Image 1 (tube, one colour):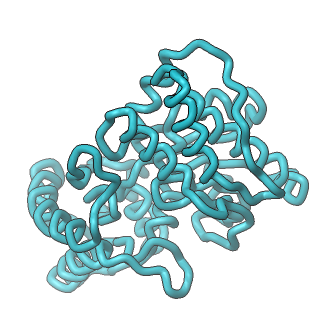
Image 2 (cartoon, one colour):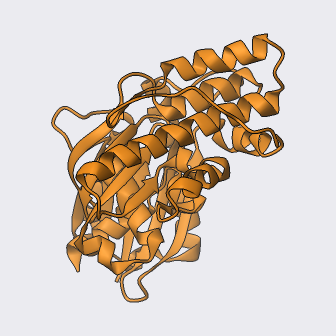
Amino acid sequence: MLVLGIDTSNYATSLAIYDTTAKEVVCDKKQFLPVKQGELGLRQSDAVFHHTVALPDLLRQINDSVSLTEIGAVGVSCKPRPIEGSYMPCFLVGKMAAESVALSKGIPLVQTTHQQGHVAAALFACKDEKLLQSDSLVFHISGGTTELLLCHGYQILKKIGGTTDLYAGQAVDRIGVRLGFPFPAGTYLSQMASECSERIRPKISVRGTQCSLSGLENQCVRLLEQGASHAYTAKYCLVAIARTIVKMIEEARKEYPSLPVVCAGGVMSSSVIREEVQVIVPDAYFVPSKFSSDNAIGVSYITALEVK
């Protein structure tokens, strides 16, 4: 059976087709929402507009590769997190599209969340069937989330850590935009950071499994004002995030010593962060960028698991 997944986050419109027989993603399409140079995101009304414009074209592109007449189920992320009160208008666009497809074809509709989609995509990318039936520690770090989660498969049992202020992705984007990169700036910042060979000793703020990242932005701004190169500043930002992740993993493993650690979300696709973390935590799973940035792959995978 072919399953369609839809995700309309605050960063991208994305669709994916998962084949339950082949157990693989056979097609995925994504379009990042346009953000003006120098700006740090979109108002929700603008995000809703851009999703409404993008979805029909992406559906046509998907249909050119895999006929939508063959879809046997559809899944959609309806809100940011699986908690009461979690809400963001941009997800209503995807929900409307998914319900329309399901009703018109008389097929099952699975409603999930953006965060669970990220967790599911990460577990799928790990290619480890045991992770789907067991507990794990999942870092979900993106532009709108910095959380350490206790999960069972893609089900989120509880949040056990996270930031008390700025999200890691916000810090990355703010520094990246200050350096002249477009939003979202993670890919560009990581590329620039790789040009710096100097050893970085960042200051981090971690207490237990809680971290504070607001100081990181100030530190990077101060470095630039003191004449530090853009490459050094970019690397400082990413290494600080990596060391923060390491410290939080070490603290979490005091309570959950035997659980695997999975790193998901767009920020985790940075090679600089991955290399820094794996020096100290070599067994941490890092998800390839295709499965890390905002996408519908995890949503389609959850749908396949729910309707099989």
